[in-house]
Length: 85
Image 1 (cartoon, helix red, strand yellow):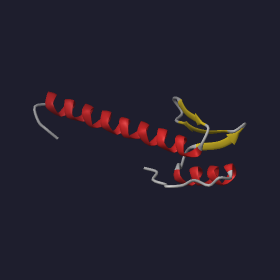
Image 2: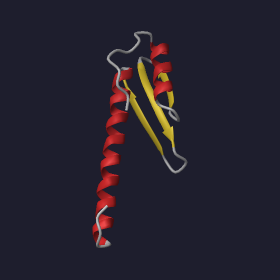
Image 3: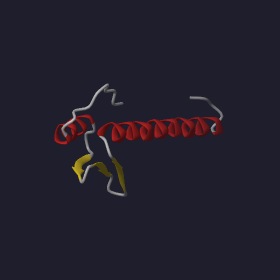
Image 4: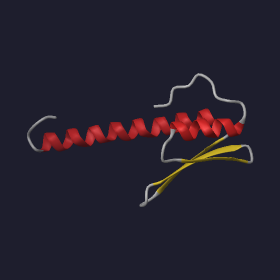
């Protein structure tokens, strides 16, 4: 989870910070917009925003949601098997 109070004003520095914080993501800045792409082999996720902090917040929210869904699925599987995790 990315927790920063401030981001560099220089777009290239902000890109470097995002790259360090988001291993596996390809991060770039073009035409005033930041883009982060994760290629998972079976699909691709891309986040585009006007500032680095919006990219980071969006990715954090997506992973939190995925974690919650994973826990819900695990709970349903455990209940269907007659036991709780």
